[in-house]
Image (cartoon, rainbow, N blue to C red):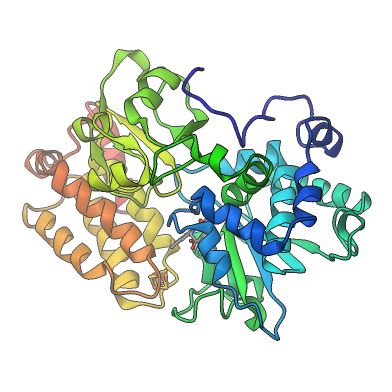
Length: 438
Ligand SMILES: Cc1cc2nc3c(=O)[nH]c(=O)nc-3n(C[C@H](O)[C@H](O)[C@H](O)COP(=O)(O)O)c2cc1C
Ligand code: SF4
């Protein structure tokens, strides 16, 4: 479709795109050879100039992050590739791993050369089956061809890559939780500073980057920062993969230039809402960001600045579309169960707050709450934001506050009716009440 710009996803759909031979037929690994002939500082500078920002959620400038790694460190430096992808609504890294694992490996080689790293770990979400197997096969192929291991590509540069599978905890996607887990400990986030770039895995300076971020590096080094900047906006350059779920005609992963109107993605590329229904709400950046009303969503563009101006975030680009038939209280209840389950429990506001939110919202959904509950939810979320070791607490509080503020009428209807007004069948409503109190 016209609005898509396939830089990172250009090989999706090619026969056996995940194999080395297919990748090399399409020109793959040429850029690694080019980069290994460049001054490492020049590689970092090119990435800085491209304006690439981390695609894992926080949007931190990638070249700047690499620049924080001390050049004179006595400890070995490490690269941790964040392939944990556990945010509800987000499934774009899975596509990159499944369909183009060699592009990621090439990004790892170039990044490691730029920063002076000789060991990289890829931390893969525990539930990933096919993405893991394809990635492992690709790493094995790259070793067999001499692209990884000692004397990478016949140069004096050594690089080892190890895949580590997680065990199914969302918190292991948080960069310091990931590092703890990689070290064999429970994935409990660390207090920062020190930041991983200074003290990371095994005490060494560590770059933690998302799969999509690293997959963009080969294209940038091959084509140059200026070419990358020709897509997107001044402040949000390049393209981004959005994973779109919900009742749209064509859900899936779409690579589009940043700054694309949200409407174009939902109504043109994804074919609009199924069955001629209306969009009621939109969570544009994964389940951790504030929800937008239909009017807000239709007026927003898909870039960091426009979404911030609309009161939400680009996050991971995991867009959840919500239609007019969806109960917002039930949707929030589902999210709150997730966050309460995934809190690691170190910080009181998060451990207790996520539990209270889960309980309050589940009671409202089942028709058992009171009008005071909405203010109670807002008061709890106020105390959860900015008060904890990591931002999982904020990630639970921000959607809760936005759902209650923007869709308060729906919460009040539940209280008024003593049941979910979206469930016309009384048997179903009763079943929901029993399930939510279980
Ligand atoms: C609870 C939580 C879960 C996260 N999960 C992921 C994840 O699955 N993948 C990811 O890349 N970043 C995740 N992040 C963000 C990482 O902490 C980190 O910012 C990111 O890996 C940095 O890479 P980038 O600069 O390339 O985006 C998570 C953050 C939090 C607070
Ligand atoms: S905010 Fe929550 S998940 Fe993060 S460290 Fe504290 S308790 Fe753990």
